[in-house]
Length: 390
Image (cartoon, rainbow, N blue to C red; front, side):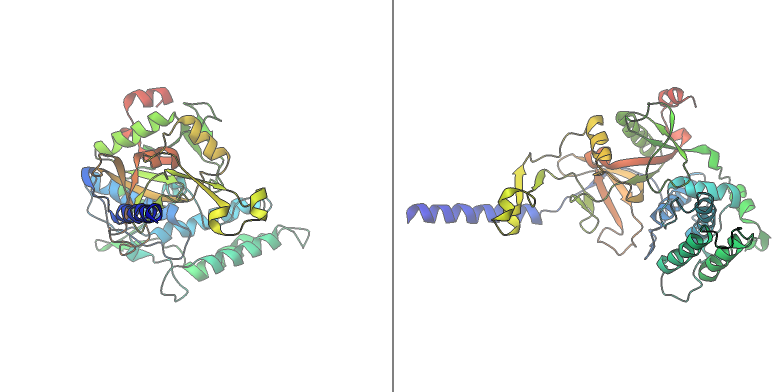
């Protein structure tokens, strides 16, 4: 009886400790922070790539001395759909035609079409309360799938106008001019007058299946345009991010948010210290029932695992690190234990968590789960620029 009582007391004590650990909230202090614009909401669309990059551009304009501007994400998205449609057609329906994209997709549109304020283009002609693109994307893709089958034995020259007509019906035609400060201006002139130059920005990644210090075509599904990234060792990629944020530049971030340690609701992302081994296909699973019997849990350490270049490559190669989501890094913070985190502006609305739509991603999480970044060239340390031939 005494042994049983002691065991129950110990288990009860462990339960209390675990409950306290779960309830303990992380407390963050600011190390450095870049002034940015309000958190936006991508709503029911897969357009995080545009929301993150437009937030990045708005922040760059602030850094350059412009007033705070709310730029239209859907202006960029609308033109990107047209470009995707053309490429999908040229590849005979074998390419990627979806809602996803990359930071360079925004820059490619800005280069040719400029940008406009939100007031000049809402991108919602379907009388909905929020943006939702599934029906539009599925219907236009279905059109192109039939077109590339070439049922007439000769592609008609109106196919692109037909697809564009559907896109315009849902989102509206892109404005050729709009009113700004009492006069009509083109989107291209508007961007130029604000001093924004797309050539000032580069994308970087870090994987060993390509040579370092070269421009590479990163094999991720949403790089539908086959744009090129500079490939650098992970320590130098982290150095670029730190140098940028410590010198008044923000970072457009592309990475994986599928880890169990990622919680937008709680406001932070860490690498899990508990490794779970799936036992569902093992011999024991044939005889034992229950979730706990099918999951073998082993505690590694109370700290996050150490991240190496090799671990990055392994998780990328086996699809544990995937191109899930783009967000915007706007600062560096520390928790009460001194762990470094990157302050991250998400695009899931400012009321999506108690941190105003922001979360903090740990240094280890960012080191492992970053797929690519975009920064201003001046934010890159000179010795790294030299290695890249810039």
